[in-house]
Image 1: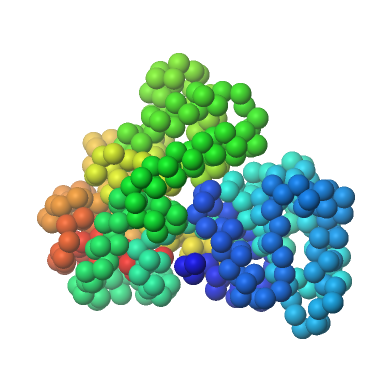
Image 2: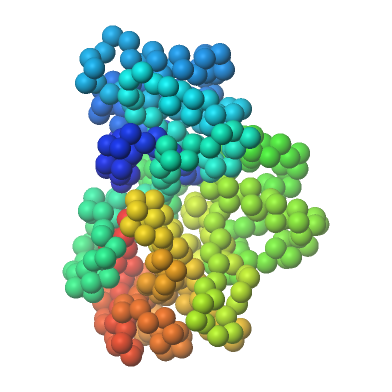
Length: 411
């Protein structure tokens, strides 16, 4: 089993300070495997899944009995890890967990995992605020596949400028594999197109027929399946709910509600425009991307989605581990000048990123945006291998480079 990038954060930030670890993320991105690996390393504890009938009965009858059983017959210095998988499907699960956690006789480290956003399943429960940290687990990216060290955001921009000129052939090979199979562990590690097709079909069915049903109880599952089939061709462009409303023949509010469910279940994500300091910026229309970009047929849109996934993973990791508030936006004016992505740190522009398949000349739109952003470094990432050039626009160092040479420096 491949080690995951969140392991040290869970140990050092949660367990070292006796906090519960919430780990959410897309279905089949490795949350259960992560919990079981930590449990195996610790050597003491248990894994529980809400889908198991025996565990549901035990939790419903006496949640405290689940955790108390781990303390029997062990040495006082042994701290077990308790993995509670999909426990958020239980009624008043936060209230029950809070009561057990606050009255534990002896310490235990607790991991709560779920494929839906754990904050969705409130159901009137008491808050666990102050007792947990929430982490978002992403699929594989170039850095994790290559085994690169986790980056320090304070040093990232300088490191990219100084070291991105030295590429490795295996990074380009890994990037091409990600483009073909996506970053989810099972299809990526299998490396077979037939396995990918079967896995993808099963995942979509489970997200809609199981997760969405549990989350919303809505009856229009067949129409949402039709909605999902229309999304890959809209990746990377301005996302129009009105257009979807016409195609599906439903109301605007219905489309908005259905899309919110898909965001909460980690099927898709939307990036909003950055409007501060940008005259005549778009203010509402977002850009749509998928967590599994292997669904996208268009090569340019798939490559842009791959870059978006890498940047979003870095933003989530740095935010979840206390490095600051990192957010991902894009830049676009009403005159259709655009930069694909902008990482914002603590509400201030931090790193603009443009994506091109093979254009090695800097985008002319950088001259429009860079003076207003005041960022020391900007990137233009291309799929073409073995390229690295530096440019200067005002006070900004602009790097045009192969994506395989740069994305390895992210998370």
